[in-house]
Figure 1 (cartoon, rainbow, N blue to C red):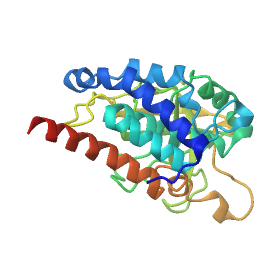
Figure 2 (cartoon, rainbow, N blue to C red):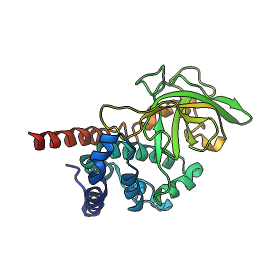
Figure 3 (cartoon, helix red, strand yellow):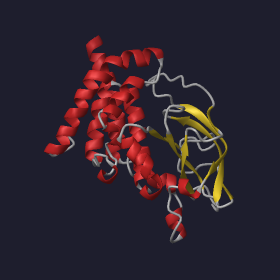
Length: 268
């Protein structure tokens, strides 16, 4: 299905072993209790799979989208909550990799299994149109201040790094967006409500509030150089790097559907 070479197949085989030994056995409890799958994420971290798409330069595996999609498929067949968390982590890491001069320490930490990332895009007001955020960063002393209400963020309160979309400080319309890296320990970051999902109950996709979060220039991940078109649409463009790519998105939906269908067959 994914047309992988021998080296890529070995990575998928490794992920299959990790999922069978550590992720699948905890999946029923995670869904039943609606708890974050700490053991599953720890297993991915210890095996180096949190660095799946981190460039070799920073200690990662630098796998392409085919391998990423295949690994997500494997993880999702064992636990859809873990797979959603993992997908959003890989999306966040893809954003880091687009600005390595600002994110090297976080890329290296992810490769070591010491950093979990995610995306914080959808807002109250923008709904599913995440490429047109309603919040807007305010320029202050060479940096920015950001206040935003994010309607749901996978791994809310658990991730170490949040790639946040917002209108650029000089935006003239919503599509002129940019991306900032917000860290869990930044002042003004909070989870504003609990996640109570019908499915994937362990992925902690809770709403988050950002209250006047101070961000230095080194936290802006979108390019601000060259023609204005190069600086706009940060949130829209990043979706094509992984989560919005057809392979990444297909793996995302297939892991949920495949896992559900498999359980239905066993039940019948």
